[in-house]
Structure formats: C-alpha cells, structure tokens
Length: 112
Length: 114
Image (tube, rainbow over all chains, first blue to last red; front, side, top):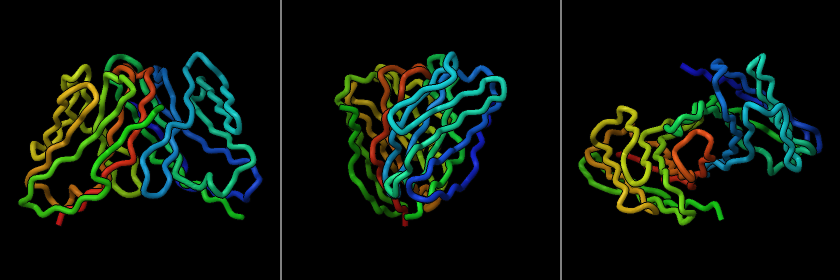
C-alpha cells in the first residue's frame, strides 16, 4: 500500500523560508494535501495540489510536486512564530473512499 | 464557512461508562469521517459515512459505535473503553467521499479513559 514519509523536525529563524518535504510511494496518488496542526487543535487544511500540476502558490505558501521522484514540498515564505506547528502531508488516490494516507508529520519550530 | 464543530472538547470516562461524542457541520457536505489521533502521530481513519450510510469501517472494535442521524450530524457512541483508547478523536467532513474532495476537520474531543 501507499507509504508517505516526512522528516520529523525542522527549526528555522523567524523571517526565513521553511521547506517541509514529503515523499510517497504510490504513483497513482492523485490528490496531495498539506494540513497544519497547532497544539491541542484539529487539523487545518492549508493547501492541496492535483497530480496534473507541478506547482501551486497561495500567498506565503508554495507547493511543488515532482511526480517522477514522488516528492512533494511545502515552502513557507517569511516564516512567523505563529507558523510553529506540526505539518502533515496526505495523499489520496481518488476513487470514492475519501481515504487519506498521512505522513508522520513534521514539527516546525520557529525561533524569534 | 468551513467549520466543523465537536462536543465535548474534553471527556474523562471510566471503563464501564457509556458516553457519546458529537460532530456537526452546516456546509452541506455529504461525507463525514471519524479519526483517532494519538499524541505526536498522524490521524488514523476509523469510519466514513457517505450520504448518511456507513461506507468504511476500518476494523474498529465494536466498543466504538458510529451513528449518522442526518446529513449534518455524526455521533460516536463509546462503551466499555480501554485506557489505550485515550486519544484525540477528530471528526471531518467533505463535499462527497471521493479523494478529490478536501476534508475539513473539527477541533477534536480529547478523551481520557481511566
């Protein structure tokens, strides 16, 4: 089955860019999502990209998809302390189940 | 508005208790989900309801019993739970159950089983 991997921890300085990486194994993954989870809270959908796209930009967020390498990244420009959270990537193969496969999550620490 | 609400926010229950978790959305979504999340782990899918019918049960023990009374409401009935069932229970909804529909999550219910 699908396996989604992320590095567990990333530390950056406030104002720098953050890049969170994700790799997946199933090339038929069609929809790829990024979620943010702050301590004690639910998951907030940040952005998503479809497999027919290479890049998507939404304000400070840029998602890059390399289908050949099955690699997804989330870049956060001008990272702020409020961006400190756990970031999950998730894939879906479409179909009618709605089942998401999540990575383990990357904890982003932003130092002032 | 992409809000999913969950009550209660926190719940402490004994192993012999019966309790229920509630989830509500008013976005007109026709798919609703229950997830279980342990600390520092990703959410694990438990159940999927599509058009008020249970479409996926991820081999969840029968001490967890979902119910979808209408298209806006989703309940999770709990009975005879074990301490290892302590976790954050998340509800989510999406326009439909296909993988190309974004899932929106509620804030969760933090459950402690004593």
